[in-house]
Amino acid sequence: MSEKIQLTKQDLMPVFWRSYQALGCYSYDKQQGIPYLRAMVPVLQKLYPDQDKYREALRRHNTMFNTTCAFVPFCLGISCAMEEEYANDETGTMDPESIGAVKIALMGPLAGIGDSFFWGTFRLIACGVGAPMAAEGNILGVILYLILNLVPSTLTRWYGFNLGYKGGRQFLSRIQADGTLAKLTEAARVLAMVVIGGMVPQIVKFPLSLKIEMGGGTFVLQDVVNSIMPNLLPLLLSITVYKFIIKGVNTNKIIFVLLGLGIVLTLLGIM
Image (cartoon, rainbow, N blue to C red; front, side, top):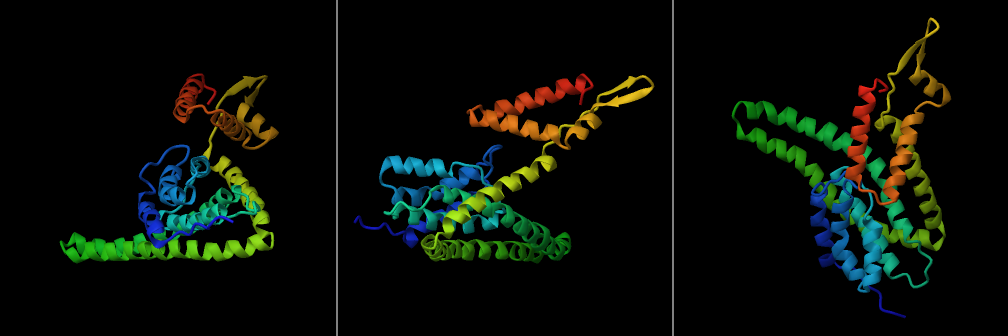
């Protein structure tokens, strides 16, 4: 039996500090995914001295991720706990896909909560208190803004990271023993697909403006498409783009092709 690898505070602190760079390399396809991967590197290097397993772990976290920045450390703490559990799993019962599935399942709900509190509540309160004083030239307005805005975020980051790691280890040990982890992984995958599916009609737009006068009536192409299935074109467009991404097509090329296609269809009067 090989000796278990234990993460120490010295191993975890670089992960926490790197969480402040969650928006440092934001991209179209992965959003916060690359900074998240970079934050995990110090832990992954220790857990996987074998280069093949290390590269596998890097690929595991080189995925799309996006949530409120204050909750990123919480997710990182859970990821650290799960990676540590998987690295020391000699029975082979833990599915490594559960690490990414749990992370993805958490980002949506946490974003909803975090945006409401940190962008919609604390920031507005801080501006309401500090802005009038700052407008009068009182430096206390700036100080109060920073305190009211940054203190809740900083406390959430620090305690969230510790809660995610320590609570994650205890939680994983319990649910792995009774088989709940496998069920949770499958549920997380389903939830992630449901969330993504719900985002398609809200974010992807493919409006048709083509109208043709026929026999005293008007043929409206958008109405015909909607009669077949509402939001059919956004769904087909999303599936097509996804297939190209899976094939490894550069996302910047896809964006420029879509931009060109939109211009051409607009000039033709179709969109």
